[in-house]
Length: 99
Image (cartoon, rainbow, N blue to C red):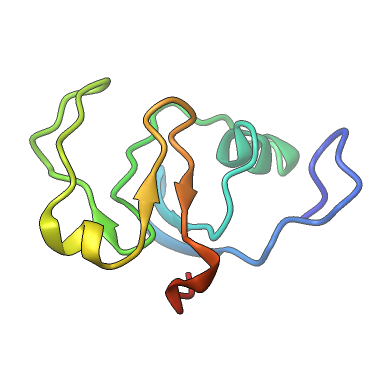
């Protein structure tokens, strides 16, 4: 999909319709307001977003907006890291891990 004011296409996404007003969207990159912009591009408005996971890291259901939890030892050992400021997921180049 071509987002407004961007020259590159987004990576393919997977859309699963849950109800007529609820979907599950799986994306593999995180551009600025990407989900809202994707839906706006096809004439829809996003009312609420819920992030379930970042890469292989599953977020706890009981986390409130703005809350966070420490990474588990297994998540740290996996080679995936989340920057606390940008919320970006980093994978060290030499880790052998692919997202």
